[in-house]
Length: 125
Image (cartoon, rainbow, N blue to C red; front, side):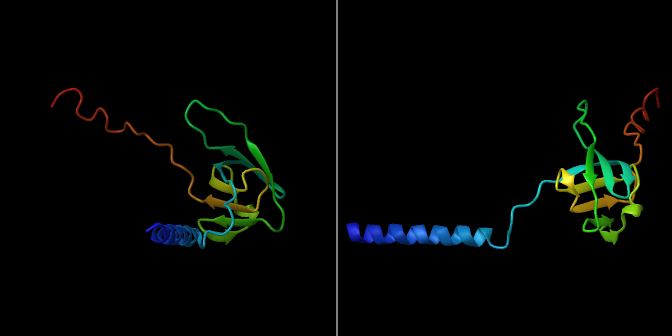
């Protein structure tokens, strides 16, 4: 009986290890940290980004160096540094230092009026 218990325990260990290995397959290297924010300034060899933060929290702008190996995308398409403009929403990888990738959205955020219809029914019928 003890022998069968040991065999089953060893088999269970191998099964769990195989399952864990399969779950991690294809994940590759750890993902680099990203910085999400708004472009503040663009120059030929650097970009300055205001990090996205929670309300009432301020963060200092972050400067990234750019070189010929930096991959720039706007709306998912390969672009040039000259295609980047202040106000664009951007994700920069890694989160500091030299930018490996810069992914931006060409559409600038619209100043929203969330309360546009808030008083629609106020003041009577």
